[in-house]
Amino acid sequence: MAELDWHAERSDLQGLAQLDRTSLSSEIDLVAVRTYRQQRVRQKMAEYDIDAVILSDPVNIHYASGTRNMQVFSMRNAASRYLLLTQNRSILFEFTGCLHLGEGYETVDEVRPAKTASFVAAGPQIAEREKSWASEMADIIRELAGIRNATVGLERLNAGTAIALREAGLTVVDAQQPVEMARAIKSPEEMKCVIASLRATEAGVGKLREAIRPGLTEAELWSVLHKSIIEQNGDYIETRLLNAGSRTNPWFQETSTNVIGENELIALDTDVVGCHGYYSDFSRTFHSGPDRPSRQQQDLYKVAYEQVHYNMSILRPGMTFRDYADRAWNIPAKYYANRYYLSAHGCGMTGEYPYLYHHGDFPDAGYDGLVEPGMTLCVESFIGEDGGAEGVKLEQQVLITETGTETLSLFPFESSLLGDCQAGAALT
Image (cartoon, rainbow, N blue to C red; front, side, top):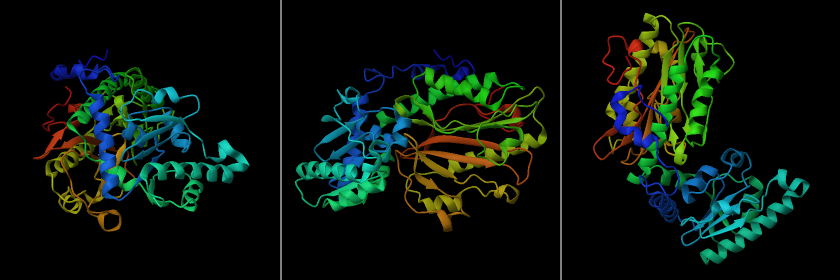
């Protein structure tokens, strides 16, 4: 059992960190979660005039059906398992020998063996396999949809299968947009899964923080979080973003065997696909000790803290993405070159729609849309000078409510790095 004694005020949240993560959980109605998500996909299919979708991204399969199997393997082998969904039927094509994993779900009407249409599985006969696969799927879709030239949405199958489906007489469209739009709005019951994943991840980050000492490698320290996530029945960590000292700036240097030195900053982005398959995404920066942080380290931390909290404060339902970019915190010139690539982003079962860009990046990269109640967003900051010795990564996960925002990630900030700032839940 994870003890959260590193933050006594959160003792009332321990129950969520200890959730029974099976379909029998009394705290979360997982049947309601699964049926809501499948209804969301079907609603968006209708809005985009799509008769059927074939989902092969394992995260999308999990979202639309509640089933999961070899998530990372399935990401690399796109056609190893897939879900066919129409308005009235849900058929899971499961990996060889694994059909039992899809049984017993109210969101799955039938489980069939997958016919893997990939070069690895078919070798030189790949073209024939793709045509056979497409012919079979086209017949099923026509039968279920009752339309000969049915429209089918795909999100990540290999090109040969898409071409073969079109040659079989179907209209093939991209399913990314409707599926992402479906996933963007969370139900209240779904939010319980998000919170449970966050609390479990925060317990793991607490263990990581306690393990910090000079002489450990980055990989050794990162493994503390990974061990805790797996122990708590989380799925996996999506990235390797823990760095120390000079490797904190610029950002996006993967965890390595670099040895953590004395009095260095240690920056972490969790990127955890945790319990129930929900993304727990917050960032914190620590200090290795034994001395107190330097003034320069504190200054970096305070600037990042200000950026995150200012941008959290302006988020409102009904705000356009463009309006957010225009109103967001202005990054000082000396930190601009190494800025994080986003100001904020959606979060659900992974990082997802929408991406909210900085004001300066909006003309080239940005797109418009609405911030809506039920969205969960991660507000980002990386502060480090171009050529500077170190950098600070901070990030908070929030829920957009009917009136504003609710902070979801409650892991405290570092009082030693905030100095005289009012840190709220900062550690002492």
